[in-house]
Image 1 (cartoon, one colour):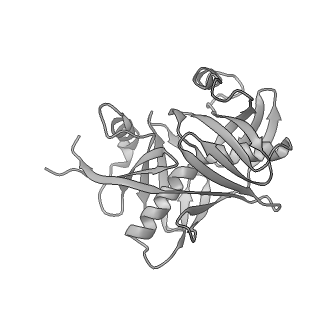
Image 2: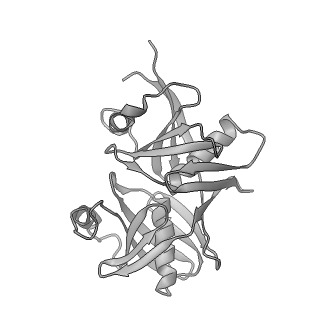
Amino acid sequence: MSGLRFTKWHGAGNDFILLDAFGQSLDATHLSELAQRLCHRPLGIGADGLLVVEPSPQAACRMRLFNADGSEAPMCGNGIRCVARYMLEWHLSDTHALRIETGAGIREVSRTADGRYRVAMGTPHFEPTPEGWLVNTGALHLVQFTDALEEFPLAVQGAALQRHPRFPNGVNFTVGHVARADLARARVWERGVGETLACGTGACALVVAGVLTEQLARTATVHMPGGLLQVEWADNGSLWLIGDAVCVFEGVWYG
């Protein structure tokens, strides 16, 4: 019986199933449905999202991300680190850096001396709104700050925002608490998933909003429920994300 070969990954607790389209045939017309089946925690493998790694004519590979509900997202800061480590260890063992094509453009990723992965996230776009700062770091986030992070009704408000007329296509929702200029804590409600243990684009959005409101320094650590992410927003506008990428296990799915 043939099956689908996969590896299971996480970045700061944000977990993914990775499928390699270099070495096996995948039906591109059914990836959304496949993501829903694979990511279902009781009935599938279980994950926040499905990463599909494909050949690219302009980069080392192309990354596609499907959320647990089957919707496709243009970019994922945690997922791209997992893809980078996978490519560097399974396909490109003679280098420590690579370019990855995403729905938000080409992103460069390199392995740091301490074994983490550094992602060039591009230049953020942002605007203030009555609901909070709207920040696009490859994925669109609404950012708010609170002094009661643990008690914040993230699931209720995150779900309500998906029906808000200002966000006809939905929006990710990041809520943070600033501990000091170089450290913040955050929770994220991700569109198509719900609350996750970490979100790379959300950590970046939080730091951007924190700098704009003069609460955070341009280099700061974001403590999320699943782990730590480091964000750097350079004076020239470039945004960087640094964090881990962990392979949990590999297997074959016969579902």
